Image (cartoon, rainbow, N blue to C red; front, side):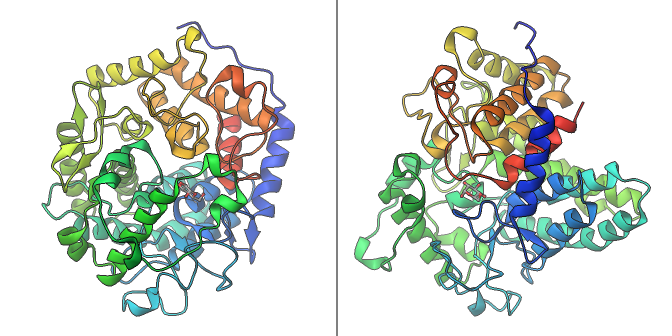
Length: 448
Ligand code: GLC
C-alpha cells in the first residue's frame, strides 16, 4: 500500500466543535445524549465513548458520565442499553414506558431503563482514564469505586449469557450488538416467524426524524419488537431467554469488546492490589474460544456464531476486525485480517476505510445504517487494533479517512464510504452533532 497522506484538515476548529458538541449534548450536567433530536436519552456504549471524549478537556465530567451510566445497573449486574433519566416520551420508540423495567425486581426502582444491553466498553474506557491521569488521586478513587461495578457487569455476562459455559456471551437482540440492522442478522431475522397481530401496536419515529432510506425496514422493526416482547415476558432473564429466543448470537464485536475490557480490568485490578483470579480465568477461556470458534477460514476473518441454529454467520463485517484490539489473533491470522482491509483499500475501488460491511457483497448498501457506512466508534476500534499489531500505515489510513469525512461533512452519525460519492455530498448521514463522533475526533486528533 502507498504510504497514506495526511489530509489537510482544520484540526483546531474541529477540536473546538467537538468540545462544543459534547457540552451541548449534556443533560442535567451529568450525562450525554448521543444526539439531541434522534436519541434523547442516555445510551450505554455511546456514553462510554463520550467519557473518553470528555477526558480530553473535563476529567470530572468524564467520570460523572460513567458514574451516571452505572446508576442504571441492575441488581444482577446487567447494564441496560438505554437509561431514561427523563420519563418524557420525547418522540422515541421504544421509550420509557415500553420496557416495564419496573416489573423486574432487579431494576433500580426509580429509573426506567431498557431491558437489553450493549457492547461493554467501560473497562477499557476506565483504563484509559486511569492511564492518562496516573498521578490523579481523584481518578484513582473513582476507578476504585466503579471497578467492582464493571466486574459485576462482566460476571453477569458469564453467568446469564453463556449457557454452555464457553466463555462467549450471547445476545438476544440485534440492538445489543450495537449494529441494529447489520446484514449479519438478515437471514436469521427472516427465519423468525410470528403473527403481526400478536405484536402490540407501535409507532416508530426514527424514520420520521431521519431519511427512511437510511433506516431499517418496517419488517426489521417488527422483529425487533417481537424479540423485545419475548424478553419482557420472561422478565429479561438471560437464562430463560436462552431457552426460548430464536435470536441467540455470539457476536464478534460484543465479545471482542468484552475481552478487551477484561484485559483492562485485570490490569487495573492488579494495580489496585485486588484479586483478579476470576477475571483471568474468564479471560483465558474467552480469548481461546473466540479464536477457535469464531474464526472462519473461508472468510479469513472472525464471524458471529448463531447459537440457536448452530452455524457461523459467514459474512465479512466490521465486528470481525475488532478482534485485533482485543489481542486475539496470532500474527498469521492478524496478517490475514490486515490484508482483508488492504483489499478494501485498493485505490481503484475508491473506498474510504472502514466500511461497516463487506463492500464486495451484494447486500452492501453504502447509505443504509449498518449495511455499509463508516461509523466513528468502529473506526476507532479498528484503528486501535491495527496499532496494537503495529500495522501503522493501515491504522493511519483508518484514522485520517474518518477525520477527513468529519472535516468535509460534519459531526454526523455515519458516513458514505464511497469516495466519489461522499466528496460530492454536503453532509454525513443520520443524526448530526453526534456525541461519539465528537469524542472520537477529540481522541484521534490528540493521539499523535
Ligand atoms: C443506534 C446504533 C447504536 C447506538 C444508538 C445511539 O441504535 O446502532 O449502536 O448506540 O444508535 O447512538
